[in-house]
Structure formats: structure tokens, C-alpha cells
Image (cartoon, rainbow, N blue to C red; front, top):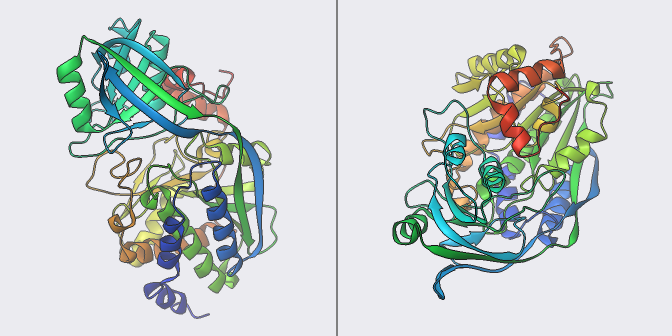
Length: 442
């Protein structure tokens, strides 16, 4: 195919967008659900029209299914299941009462300086701009647990936004230790302004069956010893259709597969497309694949999570200078802006590989919305996205993957000890130990 035909095909493509529309129409894609299985089959069937060797690999997970939850005080229901409040996935079922305490952003020092024994703690999502690193929801939760809190209320930190969700639990203990609920910005403010210092009760009702998730695999290109993983996650939180997080990533993955199939003669290394299951409950699909893979056989991983939230792409490169250089070369070719960040981003499906030194990108996009934006809320819906952005980003990423596949592009793996040292220097070691995510012996 001529050098421009695939570009023309991308510029007018409806394939990725049509896939995205059909994917979100499935509805609930919570890890382990029927909807997640249907989405995995749909993704595999779509990839099979473009590339070879498509298969689905199941694995067992801790399931979680929501029922009724609420927050009460003096026998009065303050919040219940609606657009102001949701239980956090993998919260244990139970009731807990205590004095309400507002911890703001829940910075480590805020938790250390406050007596949380027997308290119900309210913590805001996000991290102040001046703080040296981002603080994940699970870190805030487990710091509160260690400090003796009875229940955890996670407030959306963005004005006008609806309740925010996100799982708790650790790799070794997938269900959390205390009831956990997410609330909207307004509901959190109303709660703390009226009831701070008063006793409130948080109740979570849920089912926790053993469940099955699955990874989708598809392969193309020459049979080489090395391969490049192009990945996204198929699952989404059950409170929305999951268009932004992460239907968009899987739609772009499908479009890249279609375009690379048109350029197969240009592909110099085997490409494996992976649609992961159960990312939203602890990256279980990528953990499963990483644990059973010879990591030296992976040349690089390109993980799509957060694309289409803005027009321009952002690449976290985890200290790999060569990965930055490839992004810059593609940006120069297409005169298209792209931001590279050499920092570690220890969340999403690249991390079970990158933490052991595998060269990896986390690909997201530059948005004027802070934090997750619409993701992890009930309004993570299709109209937030634009087909123009899908086409432009698929074009950029197709060229990126093709250049990575060139045998002359060599990217040395990092020593895991160096990754651990870098994480320690940047303040992540203690935080990851709190959440049970520190994998190193050091």
C-alpha cells in the first residue's frame, strides 16, 4: 500500500467510532459481569476482521455486585443510592458509625496529624498542584484504615461533578477493610458543613461472589522473538457506560489494528493487541498476563487509557529516553503536538510490565479538566468524545507503533532495582507499601 493510502483510510474512517458506539450500548461492563464478557467477545470478533490469531483467555477474580447503601444520622437518611452517592467497588458489606471528620485531600500528613480512631472520614479526590506526587484513592483509603477509621467517604473534588467511584482492596486482600462510599462534590460539602463532629452511619450492602474475567488477544506481523504489546482495558465501572474510561482506548486500539493490517509490510516486529479485563479492580488482567510472560520478550508496551479526553496526546515514558524520541519523531512528521512526561505512572495496565523494567508508555490525552474529568462518574458518556480526535490519535499511534516495530529501533530494558530506587526517591515506596503494591525486595 502506498504511504498515503492508510492515512486517507484513517481520515475518513467510521470503524473505531462505530465500534465505540456499539461497545457503550452493551451497558454495564463491570469486571466479572455478563456485560464485560459480552464486550470482550465483541472486541475479539472485531479484531478478528483485521488481524490473525484472536483468542479470549479467562481468569478468576474476586467479584463485587452492588446493592443498596446509605449514610444516615439520628435515624434520618442523608444520602442513598442516587446521583449523589455510590458505594465503592470492593468495599466490604457492613455498617459503621462514628464521628464525621473532614480531611480535605487526605494528604499523608493530614492523616498522621489527626486521630481517626472510631471516626468516619471524608476525603476529597485529587491532589493539590503543589504536592510532589499524585495520591491515589486507595492510598487515602488505606492510610485512613491504618489510622483506625470506621468508614471512608470519598468526595469528588471537582465542583459540579457527580459521585466518584473507584475500587478499594489490595492484591493480597481484594476486599477492603471498612465500608467505603463515593459522593458528589455538593453532597460532600453538605455532609461536612452540617454533620462534621457529629455521629453518622455508613452502610454498604453488596455481594462478593467468585467471578471470571478475561483478556482478549490478537496478533499480527512477522513471527519474531520480540513483540510489542498494544493494550487497553475493556471493563468499566458499573455506574456509567464507560465511554471515556476506557471505551475510547479500546476503540483506538481497534482502529490501530485495522490501519496496521493495511501496512503489514512496514511492521518489523510482531504486534500483539490485548484488551485487558478487570483493570478497574486492581489491574487483574494485566497482572495475570505479566505473571505468565517472559518479560524479556516484550520490546515495548503501548497502553491506551485516557485517550480522546482531549485532542492532543500525552505520553508517560517512565524514564525511557528512546520512547520519548519516537514520540517526537512522529510529532515532527505530522506537525502534531504531543506531550511527553518522563515520570512513572504506577496505575493502569502498563505497570505490571513497566515496574520490572519493560519499556512502556501510558498514553492518555491533554485535557483542560483536572483529575479524571468525567471518568469514574455516572456521566462518563459518549457525547464527551469526538470522532475527529479518534481519527487523529489513531493516525499518530499507528505510526508510533510502526516505528517502534522497526528492528533498528532498540530500547534497552531497565534494571528493576533502578525502577525501585527511582520510585523511592520520588516518594512512592511508602505509599505503595501502604496499599500493598510494593513488589520489590528492597
